[in-house]
Length: 169
Image 1 (tube, rainbow, N blue to C red):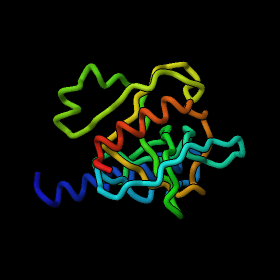
Image 2 (cartoon, rainbow, N blue to C red; image 1 turned 90 degrees about the horizontal axis):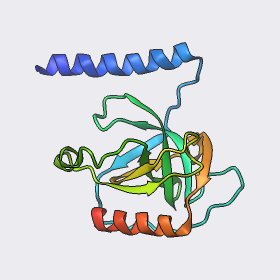
Image 3 (cartoon, helix red, strand yellow; image 1 turned 120 degrees about the vertical axis):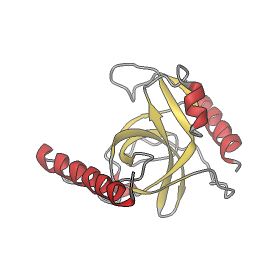
Image 4 (cartoon, rainbow, N blue to C red; image 1 turned 90 degrees about the vertical axis):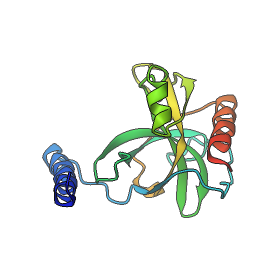
């Protein structure tokens, strides 16, 4: 595929996402994701501190717009586990209800690493979830839309330990 075709496809994807948002009646959420990073050496100051105060806190699963890996402007509203604050942003890990054990070899080939966390109140249908360990999200707290639930301390500590191992911090 030529450079012009890739550019046109990226633009079409961004326009399609914007158009879909406009047609749905929702305001576009700009700046929800500040950056998605691959493993880095700087360790976040991880703390467990969920509070029932309507604001996103470490240890809580909240909802935010997250772009796809392709970085072409497309993405979707997803649950994420907040693991830390690095002012002025929240650091979070992506959740999915898809079972990535079935395609573990393909996921590994693309550098994606997942861990099971089971089910909880964050998923209205009670589906088991997995957390993606290799992609650290930096979120603007003002753009997080809602809290889903607090993850219990034991599962939070296990996820953070696994993310440390995968990301090298």
